[in-house]
Image 1 (cartoon, rainbow, N blue to C red):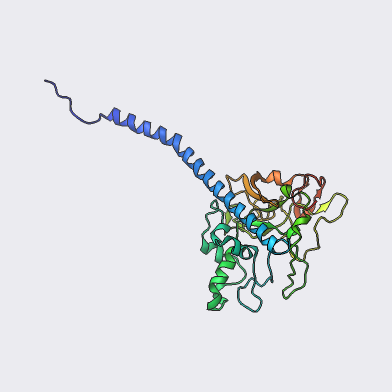
Image 2: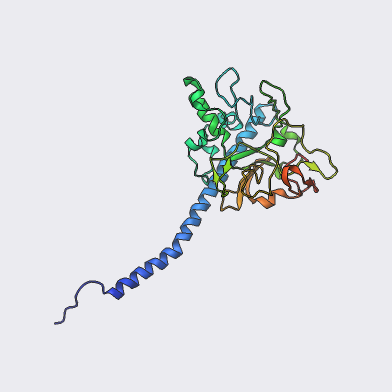
Length: 290
């Protein structure tokens, strides 16, 4: 009786390897897309939590929007301890991790120490945890539309005198951007780094007739968008499309959250460096209260 020797021939082994390679080529992009979609969904959930907390805060503050920042000291130590919006919302969120988008791989250490004006080492020991949280709040991946909701009026101990605008004065809350995904900095090649940014600038400022759309003349801002420098951190005024390099998650003043391309959030606005362009269609513009 003939007995066949057990085992694979070289041809059979090569065929198996080829099949595995083909399956991997098909499945790996699917897995990557699924992972990216999961991050986008979690980021959208975080954004939704942010606007929900903001609306509850506003309800407790006589309908005033949260302050973007309080004293401008960037320090958690008295007598002028600072607070950023992410800290002000913590009583309603109770989760510092929600300030970070899962699409941004920057860890807590990078968010807390890179580029923040006040070094935690200079803060008294009893305030180090508060400073750590404050620095992470400054690098939140959900930037506040501060030009309209919490403008800086000047004055105060450090030149900061923020005001929380009345949420009821937003004429089209379902079409007014409250927060959007953001970036802190970018490398010379344009790669995002060091987390997000707690505040950003709107793409345009002046209406086509020359009048100012801002509710008050600010004493602090980033200086608008910078489209002529595509690798600049403020090419989008501090906003950033973390999801596949195309989409940014946005929360709107009425409480809902969606994802949009950066080109979509500039509707009705001729974007140019330093607010050099104009708002030519007030009905389509998504940032002001009109």
